[in-house]
Image (cartoon, rainbow, N blue to C red; front, side, top):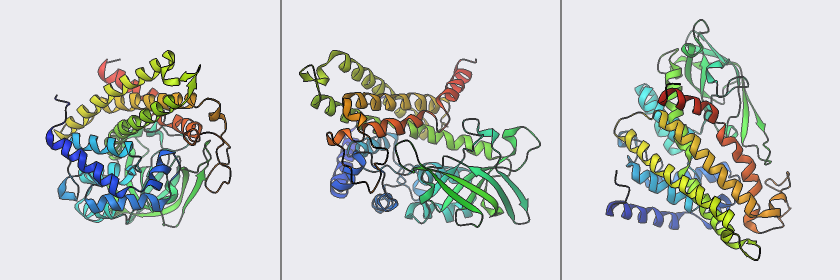
Length: 397
């Protein structure tokens, strides 16, 4: 596999850089760069700019309104956006539900929902995890009982990221409890404005209400909102999770994080010299950089294989494990690099506070980011579960 960019790909990279230079405001980039929580309007504004350019659904086929980019183009775009501190594309509609509807959805569902994902009419969130069903997703207890032309949904979902912004949620529900747990699960599309739905925020250790609990009490969902066949939701869930795990790897975000770490290490002092010249710290940065380069290559191979028609398999688990460990290592080194300034983190330092961080501007986000990103080795299927999948699939253990 030739990993050098062609002339066309270099030209595309220049086009992406020009777009970012002309459309990404310094204020928004600074907010992203300092890991501050964005408003719904800020996310939607960025999505609208990308959609206007035809770049929002860059992995979708042109038949569904996408850009149909190559693996290399998507890699370039992700890396350039991350390096420029552009907002991330919220994945739940574009990168998760969209591919599911293209593969399993009815023609009516594709024609109705896909354009609404693109133009921002619908903001989707994910209804997978429950209090007793996280990595062991097949243990979910939220039920959907068929009653005429509707399903009656009762239960609870948790850790619903940005659910406070969403008007739609795609859910895994139990429609049959008589057989094996995996065989009685279905995939439903639910309007968040339906009576009987309650959202409660969960305030995280970094002070932000990024995730939520969602409660369903006798919620009536039209039967036409079932994706695929009843009791075949586990197949859809596994397909969706391969896309989620590949995205969690976050090659572009890790690349941007490493670049920021290098700038901080060059600025901070250790023994009267730049921290970057400390042999022990420099060795740890070099180790992370080597791991990141190897993961970026693997990520390209997985995307290229998917383009050729191969479904992401155990490779998505490998990327999820390694990618999250790399990002956590970068956050840990950043926290260490800013030294005692990492301790100056008031838990109430959320939107509206009048307490500025007392240290360098880049130090203010070091500890909140470190704490927040402990989660990435858990969601999308914990790393322990992914290691089990790798061992079983590749080693036969």
